[in-house]
Image (cartoon, rainbow, N blue to C red):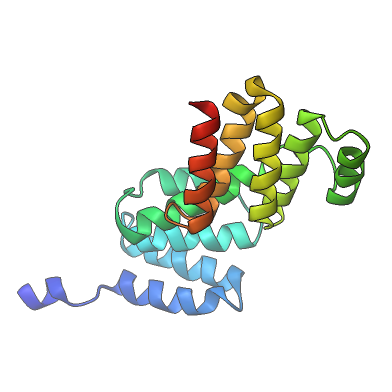
Length: 180
C-alpha cells in the first residue's frame, strides 16, 4: 500500500505522455490530459497541461475554470498564473494592428491612449520589453491611465513572463516608483 502511494499514478503517466505530445500535436495532448483528469480530477499537472494545450489551439473558454482549482504555490501554480496572464493579455483591446498603431503614435507622440494600445499590442505579440516600455511611457503621460488600464496590462505581461523574470522585476519597480 505504501509503495502504491509513492509510485506514479496512471494520471501521472498520462501527463508525462501528454507533455511530450504538446510540442507536436496539441489536440492529441488535449485528449490525453482529459483522460488523465478522468483518472484524477484534482491533478494539477493535468489541469495546467490541458490549459496549455487548449491555449495553443485557441480554445480559451474553459481555461480559467480549469486553473481556478490549481494551487498558486509551486511550479504548477506559477505556470497556471503565467497561462492566465497570457489569456488576459490576449483579451486586452489593443485597438488595431502594430504597424497602424506605430504610425498613430509617431503622428501623435503625446497621446497616452495610443501608447497604451500599442503597448498592449506589443505585449500580445510577445514583444514584452518594448510593450512594457510603451505602457510605462503611457503611464508617464497620463496618471489616471497609469493607475488603471496601464497597470493592469503591465501586470498581465508580468504574469505572462513569470513573477521572477528580470523584465517583470525591472518594470514592476519602475511602475511602483511612478505610482507611489
